Length: 248
Image 1 (cartoon, one colour):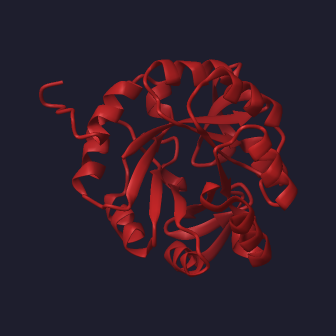
Image 2: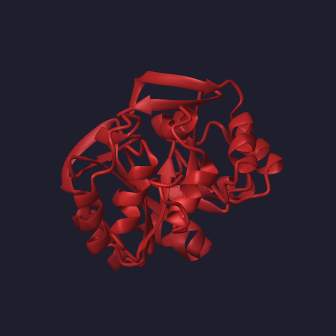
């Protein structure tokens, strides 16, 4: 598994939200490039970048910052937030994104989704953002009653093989992952997925490793890294199976 340090960009700054609430933000870096360099210097193999302004507005806002990040570090980034048209996806790839994360539009516009997969293939990842197992959309601002697992199964039938699954009620709360939910998601995914939500400690990462879900390919970590609960290198060692928290 791979550790994905998170860089969420809002108003040009690197922030973390609490449970997806745009009014409950903490600013950690005035320049997101500083966060990117810090995570890569610490051993990150890839970065997870979200244009929160884009997610809220429906179109990318921070692509210039994304270009600065990709120019500053030599690891791939995956980018989400506001990628709801073919042009927006192409612009994200042009800005340097190695993978593009589709959200709202992937559920509601199958022609868009099919076109993105045809044009960009394995670069396409679909984000499943859920509250209590139900799909949220439009940058987490719209809640539905659609079971997230049914969406995963439907998208898998259309050829989607890579997902990000985010537990919104745990996001930014340092409350630990929902391992039962992770197991259920793993059963629904045809392909691979990355989990996000509530990671607070080395023990949380060990709990995910212990699930032994072969299609769980990575874990997104945000606030725990910013709050120095553990380092990128320590987290990656756990996911590589080379770290024992009892010995350090």
